[in-house]
Length: 383
Ligand SMILES: Cc1cc2nc3c(=O)[nH]c(=O)nc-3n(C[C@H](O)[C@H](O)[C@H](O)COP(=O)(O)OP(=O)(O)OC[C@H]3O[C@@H](n4cnc5c(N)ncnc54)[C@H](O)[C@@H]3O)c2cc1C
Image (cartoon, rainbow, N blue to C red; front, top):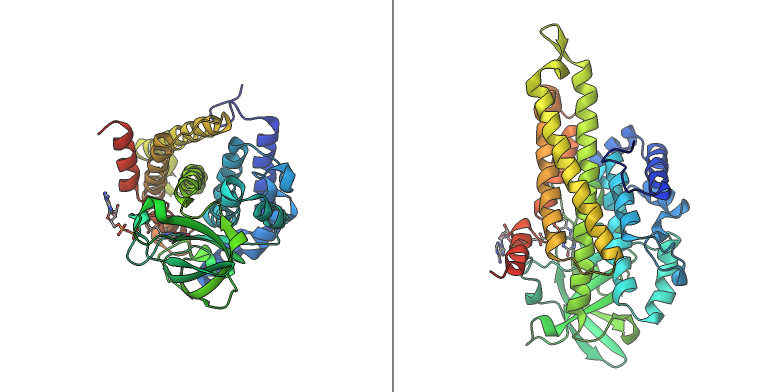
């Protein structure tokens, strides 16, 4: 009988799980992940393996070379990636979801036909540039400006914390085309990351080192008219759609991270002996595992149900906010409990739990802080 971990998954989704686990074990073995993390180096081998196996194409429309996968397929894939290594989902999401899905959801036919096939073949990497030094949560207050120049636009401003932008070929840049307006002055641009006037600096962070964030400067960067995603001053609703999918993927990623914490700590607890028996025999240790399992299963159930809602063409917004909070708070709690179970060993750099602990700490901050998600929930409750 299928348990909660499998119930409702199609045979293809079960296959995605198995296949991704094998693929990642080959492309990004444990020792290599440790080396890349220490060097803050992008896991190119993981990206290439996923591209070769066709996973870059998963959520895109077959009309543009995609596989036409469902949102449920996507969350199953993202969970499987993070279950191997949190950075395996972080290397996938900027290109496919934070970047590419904006083209799919809001881009014109010209942009979709020209760029989505390249993303599907793994020939193009992307990143998503919204946050700025003076505006993070207050997204409609961004200062990056685009002003008309002949048959295009000139982009000027600064973005901050942009994940994996240093390896990106194209950037989704959120800018103001009407400086006086707030939401109604926002436009999305598809910008060649190697254009004249674009420069970047890496940021050093506690975790997420293999897809580290960057500071980006735009100094009068020319963007042709046909590289506007959607319509001038009408970018806000497309931006919200993209961020909504990002939040669901962050919850799916959290499920993978919780699996990792549980599996890593379980192997340790079965082996480590105190008072003449494995520490897994102590009820205090068993309860920590049970708490982790509760967090994983509740987040999984929520994530899959919301993916089903998206697949039914509904527009769950409060729901993705709930899943994002549940998932990111849950993954941090699991990383903490795994470290508790491992005692001193968990705190040393010799074990991978410290890396997970560092990587998941950003969960409640990135993708719209959990306070901002609470604002969304409160608003939908009529408060
Ligand atoms: C590792 C990392 C990767 C990232 N990747 C990207 C990326 O790829 N692209 C991108 O565009 N951005 C990215 N970000 C930025 C991230 O989305 C922002 O950090 C986040 O939205 C918060 O903005 P802020 O840091 O400016 O904090 P602020 O908005 O200044 O918030 C500071 C504190 O005030 C609280 N607060 C602010 N406003 C309210 C309010 N109205 N109600 C209640 N509390 C409030 C916040 O919850 C927070 O606790 C990344 C950040 C990190 C750390």
